[in-house]
Figure 1 (cartoon, rainbow, N blue to C red):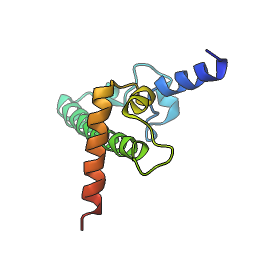
Figure 2 (spheres, rainbow, N blue to C red):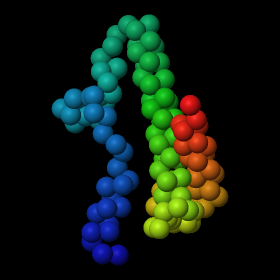
Figure 3 (cartoon, rainbow, N blue to C red):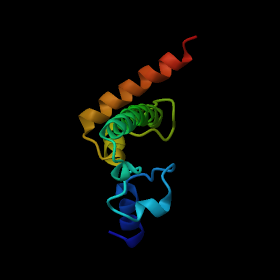
Length: 115
């Protein structure tokens, strides 16, 4: 495998940076949104619950964007469309999952076009 392909693969496997957390804080592996410094268990539960819900919502939204992108890439009207197998390979999914995501993305796009 050429070096540039290995570098691209490594970049794809890294988690996305959390842009709202200061970069200095991420240098400390024990740091997580300042939760480790909270002494009040009530406040800790409240804040950690807020973060968990925010991450779930962000993950759900990211999956929707994945589905939309998959549907757009597999659109039969595109001259450079990808097959479900190609989409699966690009996203590191199984082909069956790619087919489901493409259909989900088509549904989302259809719903967005409906007034």
